[in-house]
Length: 180
Image (cartoon, one colour):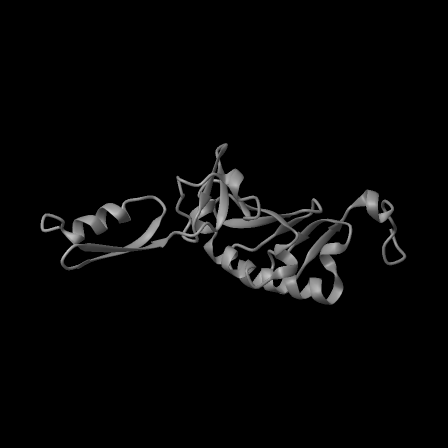
Protein backbone atom coordinates (compact mmCIF):
# COMPACT_ATOMS: atom_id res chain seq x y z
CA UNK A 1 0.00 0.00 0.00
CA UNK A 2 2.85 2.39 0.74
CA UNK A 3 4.49 1.78 -2.62
CA UNK A 4 1.37 2.72 -4.62
CA UNK A 5 1.14 6.31 -5.79
CA UNK A 6 -2.52 7.24 -6.42
CA UNK A 7 -1.50 9.61 -9.24
CA UNK A 8 0.33 6.79 -11.04
CA UNK A 9 -2.66 4.49 -10.65
CA UNK A 10 -4.95 7.24 -11.92
CA UNK A 11 -2.75 7.83 -14.98
CA UNK A 12 -2.67 4.11 -15.78
CA UNK A 13 -6.45 3.77 -15.44
CA UNK A 14 -7.09 6.90 -17.55
CA UNK A 15 -4.83 5.53 -20.29
CA UNK A 16 -7.41 2.81 -20.93
CA UNK A 17 -9.44 3.46 -24.09
CA UNK A 18 -12.87 3.24 -22.47
CA UNK A 19 -12.11 5.50 -19.47
CA UNK A 20 -13.11 9.18 -19.61
CA UNK A 21 -11.75 10.01 -16.15
CA UNK A 22 -10.69 8.30 -12.97
CA UNK A 23 -10.39 9.30 -9.35
CA UNK A 24 -8.08 7.35 -7.07
CA UNK A 25 -7.75 7.73 -3.32
CA UNK A 26 -6.35 5.79 -0.40
CA UNK A 27 -8.38 4.73 2.57
CA UNK A 28 -5.98 3.73 5.27
CA UNK A 29 -4.88 1.22 6.32
CA UNK A 30 -5.45 -1.14 3.38
CA UNK A 31 -7.87 0.14 0.75
CA UNK A 32 -7.42 1.87 -2.58
CA UNK A 33 -10.65 3.31 -4.05
CA UNK A 34 -10.81 3.76 -7.83
CA UNK A 35 -13.84 5.58 -9.30
CA UNK A 36 -14.12 5.44 -13.08
CA UNK A 37 -16.26 7.42 -15.50
CA UNK A 38 -16.75 5.46 -18.70
CA UNK A 39 -16.63 7.07 -22.16
CA UNK A 40 -20.05 6.73 -23.74
CA UNK A 41 -20.67 5.35 -27.21
CA UNK A 42 -22.26 8.07 -29.32
CA UNK A 43 -22.02 7.12 -33.00
CA UNK A 44 -20.44 4.73 -35.48
CA UNK A 45 -17.86 6.30 -37.79
CA UNK A 46 -17.05 4.88 -41.21
CA UNK A 47 -13.87 6.26 -42.75
CA UNK A 48 -11.86 4.74 -45.60
CA UNK A 49 -13.58 1.38 -45.15
CA UNK A 50 -12.84 1.25 -41.42
CA UNK A 51 -15.81 1.28 -39.05
CA UNK A 52 -15.39 2.25 -35.41
CA UNK A 53 -17.44 3.43 -32.46
CA UNK A 54 -16.82 7.02 -31.31
CA UNK A 55 -17.72 9.11 -28.29
CA UNK A 56 -19.36 12.55 -28.44
CA UNK A 57 -15.96 14.18 -29.10
CA UNK A 58 -15.38 11.98 -32.14
CA UNK A 59 -12.65 9.94 -30.49
CA UNK A 60 -12.57 6.26 -31.36
CA UNK A 61 -13.43 3.71 -28.68
CA UNK A 62 -11.09 0.94 -29.74
CA UNK A 63 -12.50 -1.59 -27.27
CA UNK A 64 -16.01 -1.31 -28.77
CA UNK A 65 -17.26 -3.18 -31.83
CA UNK A 66 -19.57 -1.32 -34.22
CA UNK A 67 -21.67 -4.46 -34.71
CA UNK A 68 -22.60 -4.33 -31.01
CA UNK A 69 -24.20 -0.89 -31.44
CA UNK A 70 -26.75 -1.06 -34.29
CA UNK A 71 -28.87 1.75 -32.81
CA UNK A 72 -26.13 4.37 -32.93
CA UNK A 73 -26.18 6.90 -35.78
CA UNK A 74 -23.74 6.29 -38.63
CA UNK A 75 -21.29 9.07 -39.49
CA UNK A 76 -19.47 8.68 -42.83
CA UNK A 77 -16.44 10.38 -44.33
CA UNK A 78 -12.93 11.61 -43.75
CA UNK A 79 -12.76 13.66 -40.54
CA UNK A 80 -16.49 13.16 -39.95
CA UNK A 81 -16.15 11.69 -36.45
CA UNK A 82 -14.63 14.72 -34.73
CA UNK A 83 -16.78 17.15 -36.75
CA UNK A 84 -20.12 15.44 -36.02
CA UNK A 85 -20.64 16.61 -32.42
CA UNK A 86 -22.92 19.63 -33.13
CA UNK A 87 -25.19 17.59 -35.40
CA UNK A 88 -25.32 14.58 -33.10
CA UNK A 89 -26.22 16.80 -30.17
CA UNK A 90 -28.88 18.58 -32.24
CA UNK A 91 -30.40 15.27 -33.34
CA UNK A 92 -31.03 14.29 -29.70
CA UNK A 93 -33.89 16.79 -29.54
CA UNK A 94 -35.22 16.13 -33.06
CA UNK A 95 -37.06 12.79 -32.91
CA UNK A 96 -38.78 13.02 -36.33
CA UNK A 97 -35.48 13.48 -38.14
CA UNK A 98 -33.51 11.09 -35.91
CA UNK A 99 -35.90 8.16 -36.45
CA UNK A 100 -35.58 8.52 -40.24
CA UNK A 101 -31.80 8.97 -40.28
CA UNK A 102 -29.69 6.35 -41.99
CA UNK A 103 -26.38 8.24 -41.94
CA UNK A 104 -24.65 11.60 -41.73
CA UNK A 105 -22.17 12.01 -44.58
CA UNK A 106 -19.37 14.58 -44.53
CA UNK A 107 -19.06 16.38 -47.88
CA UNK A 108 -15.65 17.82 -48.83
CA UNK A 109 -14.74 18.23 -45.15
CA UNK A 110 -16.96 21.31 -44.89
CA UNK A 111 -20.68 20.41 -44.78
CA UNK A 112 -23.07 17.49 -44.24
CA UNK A 113 -25.67 15.44 -46.09
CA UNK A 114 -28.25 13.41 -44.22
CA UNK A 115 -29.10 10.13 -45.87
CA UNK A 116 -32.62 9.09 -44.84
CA UNK A 117 -34.08 5.58 -44.58
CA UNK A 118 -36.40 6.46 -47.48
CA UNK A 119 -33.39 6.98 -49.76
CA UNK A 120 -33.77 10.77 -49.78
CA UNK A 121 -30.78 13.05 -49.24
CA UNK A 122 -30.93 16.24 -47.19
CA UNK A 123 -28.17 18.73 -48.07
CA UNK A 124 -27.27 20.86 -45.05
CA UNK A 125 -25.52 24.24 -45.17
CA UNK A 126 -21.88 24.71 -44.30
CA UNK A 127 -22.82 27.17 -41.52
CA UNK A 128 -25.89 26.66 -39.32
CA UNK A 129 -26.46 22.94 -39.91
CA UNK A 130 -28.08 22.38 -36.47
CA UNK A 131 -30.55 25.20 -37.20
CA UNK A 132 -31.33 23.66 -40.59
CA UNK A 133 -32.03 20.35 -38.84
CA UNK A 134 -34.42 22.10 -36.44
CA UNK A 135 -36.17 23.64 -39.45
CA UNK A 136 -36.47 20.20 -41.04
CA UNK A 137 -38.00 18.88 -37.80
CA UNK A 138 -40.61 21.67 -37.86
CA UNK A 139 -41.40 20.97 -41.52
CA UNK A 140 -41.90 17.30 -40.71
CA UNK A 141 -44.20 18.10 -37.77
CA UNK A 142 -46.27 20.59 -39.77
CA UNK A 143 -46.29 19.10 -43.28
CA UNK A 144 -44.97 15.50 -43.03
CA UNK A 145 -42.24 16.52 -45.48
CA UNK A 146 -40.05 13.49 -44.79
CA UNK A 147 -42.95 11.13 -45.53
CA UNK A 148 -43.30 12.39 -49.09
CA UNK A 149 -41.73 10.78 -52.20
CA UNK A 150 -38.62 12.98 -52.35
CA UNK A 151 -35.11 12.28 -53.55
CA UNK A 152 -33.48 15.53 -52.39
CA UNK A 153 -34.17 18.27 -49.86
CA UNK A 154 -31.66 21.10 -50.19
CA UNK A 155 -31.42 23.39 -47.17
CA UNK A 156 -28.05 24.96 -48.05
CA UNK A 157 -29.47 28.42 -48.78
CA UNK A 158 -30.81 30.18 -45.66
CA UNK A 159 -34.57 30.77 -45.62
CA UNK A 160 -35.02 28.69 -48.79
CA UNK A 161 -35.59 25.07 -49.57
CA UNK A 162 -35.34 23.19 -52.83
CA UNK A 163 -36.84 19.74 -53.19
CA UNK A 164 -36.73 17.11 -55.87
CA UNK A 165 -39.68 14.74 -56.05
CA UNK A 166 -38.91 11.14 -56.94
CA UNK A 167 -40.17 10.82 -60.55
CA UNK A 168 -41.40 7.23 -60.31
CA UNK A 169 -43.36 7.95 -57.12
CA UNK A 170 -44.70 11.31 -58.24
CA UNK A 171 -46.18 10.05 -61.51
CA UNK A 172 -43.40 11.29 -63.79
CA UNK A 173 -42.73 14.73 -65.24
CA UNK A 174 -45.64 17.18 -65.26
CA UNK A 175 -46.23 20.62 -66.61
CA UNK A 176 -45.91 23.20 -63.86
CA UNK A 177 -47.95 26.39 -63.46
CA UNK A 178 -49.89 25.68 -66.65
CA UNK A 179 -46.84 26.29 -68.81
CA UNK A 180 -43.95 24.45 -70.35
